[in-house]
Structures are given as C-alpha cells and as structure tokens.
Length: 53
Image 1 (cartoon, one colour):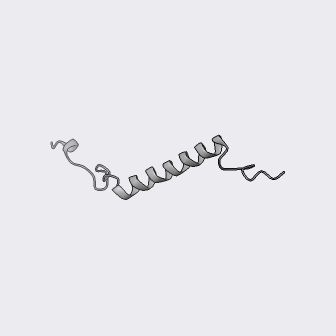
Image 2: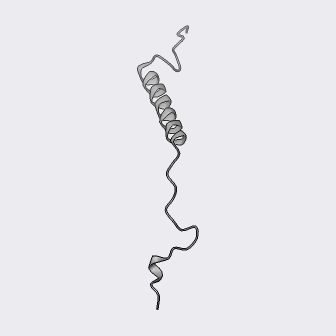
C-alpha cells in the first residue's frame, strides 16, 4: 500500500500569494473611503457644504 496523503491532486495546492498591486489597490481604495467618510462626517464635504439656502 502507498501513502496517498503525501500526494496532492492537481489544482489542490496552496493558493499563490496575492500580488503587491492588488494589496496596494485595496489599501488605496480603503484610504480614499476613510478620507471621504472623515470629510463627510466633519461637514467639509457633502450635502450642505455650499450653503446658500
């Protein structure tokens, strides 16, 4: 008998690491959303920022 646990089926290996550009894009998108939320909550950006009425 052979030990089948040492053999791996094709396509069932460990996933390749995430590319750096994907990580950087995600970090940039998160930073933009956080900045928008900060500015919106402080009243600098968003509805009513132009005053008028």
